[in-house]
Length: 439
Image 1 (cartoon, helix red, strand yellow):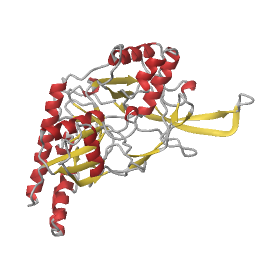
Image 2 (image 1 turned 120 degrees about the vertical axis):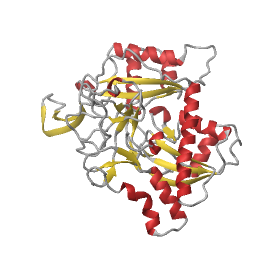
Image 3 (image 1 turned 30 degrees about the horizontal axis):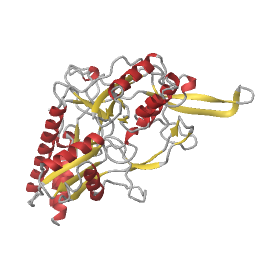
Image 4 (image 1 turned 180 degrees about the vertical axis):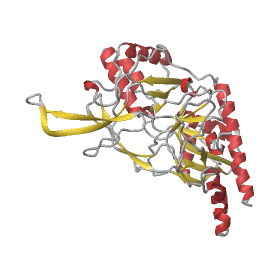
């Protein structure tokens, strides 16, 4: 997979409906991948209406995996997080923070208007220790012992609570993190009488919108397996040229209300690529898996049980749609689904001897709806596992080359349906799960 970082800055308010209930006004906390794909496709139909083959390559053949756009507005600090292009990630559902002063601790030189924040931690290892003890049917005090040190904030003694949002790491010191801000406001609008072209009585509605000047960050993945005979223009080059041209012509509009001046973005003059080479990314991936396994194994040893050969976690970086062969939706990632997904990315029978066991999960589901701009029809109504959901698994085998390659490929390609629309992005053994508060 080729990775392309896509930074976007809005020049007018952006409205993304969070629900389709009557009178609903809330916006989503991010820009979904379906919105990004639809906006690019609509721009292509205006800019290059006769290039049907090119349109198919960019939007129909599932060689490009478009991304959700996460808020990327950060406070200024000496760490330079506000001006870097390091990936923005969603906080997992196992993240916790002080209920009174939530958020990552202030960084060196951070300008935060005297804001107090008491830090963010992750609870996955605590729940792993609880699950290990629960399997051994230990006493209640022993079961609850992993949570004793994290019942309340050490600064203000207030209880911990779940925290959601998006964060970015400092490029020079990845242990330092900062949560993204999202600037929104409420717009009040009137309805228009279609016959007379004037204000319609009794129609007054509100829309929550992202402010102009908001920054967003996304990561587009382009498959390396596209085969063309004779060879056409490289798909990465084709995508880059199109995005820059459409942006320069001011044709890209995001969200709803585009005919009323909403959804405009600043010209995209540069698309970024990760600084890591594929070899470095693979080496870092293996190191990440090894360190996470060691952290979970130590919890098993503390619980006094025999550890499994290998532990790993799967964290959803975007909503994920999973169905069985009869198109019934899964509400969680199961061991059978995981095994099938791994088998699909490796040669047949390579992982036939591997089996997996789910140890813990923190997840929820959501309803996915939308509108297909090209066809002028509603999109398929689906149910998905929410972004940030986390699943802890163990394997019956140690981390051999076959399992390592399968997990790496699964992280690169994603899992589930509609991946070209930004669904199914995952991270395996995210380092966030073994980190405490900033030092």
